[in-house]
Length: 303
Image (cartoon, rainbow, N blue to C red):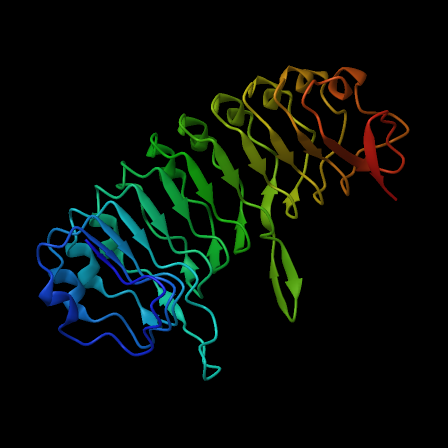
């Protein structure tokens, strides 16, 4: 166990640094001002289980040697896109294929970097419980093969550049408690991505442990699906700023733990559809939002 979290380290990592610790199980180097790239000697951490390198100014590719860490359970490289004292930013840009060899990995956090290209192939990481890839520049499709990740509890790919439907296979992620895919729609500075698009798959209704569903600020179309009413643990449903249509299903009154419902800035026809009163009577409901023309006795309206 070696904890150097937030001790003010402000240099590059020496090339042979990791070779010194072949039996180390936990290493915390997060929240410093470490610059440069990861050295290849990272592959010498033969017993490592927890490796935190987030909150630094590291740059370049994640080296392929990271695939040698077969005992690794928790890997954090998040938030390396930030300024150091000299005003320089770190740029972690590439995820190597070798990361798919880390089959004991339970937590993978690569959020808030400058990772780009297609979403990495991670479907062999069947022990994953938390996968955080938000705040990057991933493009293209959500991999249907991720539906194999039945142990996954948290999936966050928000604030990327995806143009993808939600694969029906994601209904197999039976342990999922939080699904965040918001803000993948982009149309600025000459760049355009559709975000999460097309119809909501009815298979979402199979995610019986889901507590938080955040799909706002995308290009979802079609009608609101009744199957969300089968998510009896759901507490937050954010579908704002899409192109979804009514009616608002009465079945959402089955979400007895619901605290927040955000349906504003969609295409719900207020002349034809309103918020069912049974939803407004949910015991834990704190905030519901719809557009100004949608009738609702409990909502904060967006006009």
